[in-house]
Structures are given as C-alpha cells and as structure tokens.
Length: 282
Image (cartoon, rainbow, N blue to C red):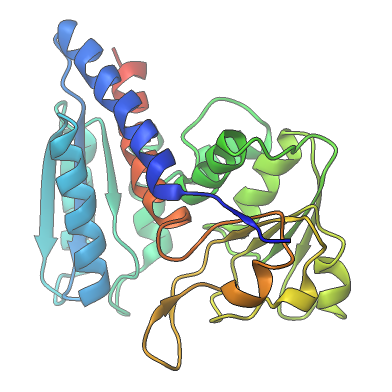
C-alpha cells in the first residue's frame, strides 16, 4: 500500500479562489474586507508567516495592513494598538502573531481583541461558540484540516479520530470540530500511556505535538488518513513534520506532506475568516 497524498497547496488554491469571488461580491455592495496583522519583535519565522499572510490578502483583493512593532513594545502600547484596530471600521479582522516577546501577556492580548474581529478564533467567545457548535470564527489550522478531509473525501462521521497533541491552537479545537462532524475522538499527549496503542486504533490520525518525525509507520493503522500538522527542522536541517513520511506512506491510506499539506490551508482559512467577518458586519 502507498498512501494517497493530500495536496494542501491545491486545496488552498480552491479556498483562495472562493475567497476572491467572495471579496468581489462584497465589493459590489461597497465593502472591501480589511485584514490587519500585528507582529512584535524580529522573530524570523514569524516575519515569514506574516509576510505570507499580508501578501495573500493583497492578492485576493483585501485591504491589508501590517503593523510591525519593536521587541521593546510595552503591554500598554500593544493594547493601544489592539484598541485602535478594534475601533477601525475598515479593518474587519486582525490577529497578533505569536509568539510574543516574553515580557508581554499573550492571554491578555487575545482577550482584548474584539471577538467579531478575532480571525485566529482564539478569543474565549469564539472558543465557547466552537464548544457549543454555534456560529463563530474557527481556529484556522483545525478548520483547514477539516477542509482537507472533506476535499479528500475521507469519511469522518463514525470514524475514530485520534489527535496527538492537546494545545489550545490545534489539539483541542481539532477535537471539537471532529466531534461535531460525527467522529469518535481520542486526545493523546505527552503523558498518555501506550501512545502507539491509541494511534493504531485511529481511522483518522492527526499529529500535532511538535516533535520531528515522531509518528512512525508502526504507529499507524493500515489504511488510516494521517494528517501532519507539525512544522519542524529535522537533524538534517530539512523541514519536516511530526510524521515520519517515508515509513508512514507505505501504511496509511491518505497522508499530508510537509511542506505542502496543512500549512497552506492555515493562511487560506485565515483569509476566509476575515471575509466572513466582513460579510457578517455588512
């Protein structure tokens, strides 16, 4: 068996085409969706992510604003920036790129963002809406995974989904989205006993633990759909995921690569959230 590769680049392109059409429709009503991205400090990886988000928004016809603040920015100064964006009518959604410098309180920052403009889907109101399966802005990476599964026609309803990782950004919201879609969900983490015993039960296995090539072929149920959310640098310096691609691809039924899998979907879904916020306010 050789796994079918789920092409995140192609699916993200579909999402972007839909976004461009939605932007064009909103513009006929006099609305130009506005997205702002705030970055604090000079983290190289964060700068790359931010430039990609801003460039994609511009390409799709959104009003895009990049707010770059120095690493010395105080909590009060960052809060003032958030207050300005909350009040700006031309900005329908914005995000603050994580991680922040250590002296800043990221939880306070997230909670200061207007939940109607919270395109990351991290504010407690959006988290609560997700838990209750009510309308709200969904976290981008888990939402992107759901779109990948749907496009690849991976059955979710009735499936046993196992998530390795319990972060607020991926693991927990991923569990809720899969649960709402009819899956039976197990969340595993660093303290799970006999982790391979759980992963080998998974019809859908989501690896989101941040450890390079951790999930190997002997941990995967034959024919399972394996979604690799990780982005790491291996010992060889090459970009890789949380899944050992070579050993898993001969066991799994479907598999996302790194790069080119979940990553492109995160940016595409962020743009989608900004457009949804603009449409909701119209």
